[in-house]
Length: 134
Image 1 (cartoon, helix red, strand yellow):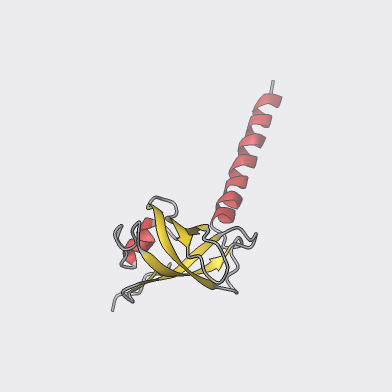
Image 2: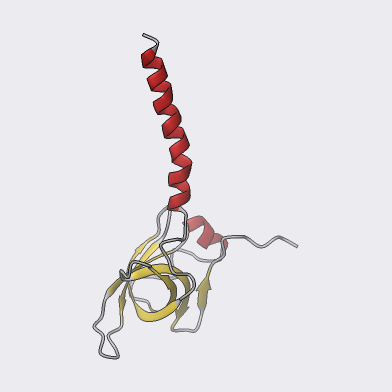
């Protein structure tokens, strides 16, 4: 009868040890090519302002012989963007902008959004490390 608690303990230990690995993998930037950032222009079609990551669905402009495509840009969390000065209204459906991003390594249309330049010239950026108060 002692065998059952040992199996249960082993299973619980394996699960607990595995979760930090999953969490670290989720927050890894390995899916993005940070060394070869790119820019594209397009119109915001959808905003998903939710945890754990905000996403923007953008229809890229058709130009230079390329057809318009639907891209998905991931950003950090609502808390990080709010601390960086963004609001839910900073980038809205219908806004046309220039998007600077780290592309997905697998070649799919999307990436990690680094900076947005609105038509007004306003730049939207964010930092993962808040500035120290002086």
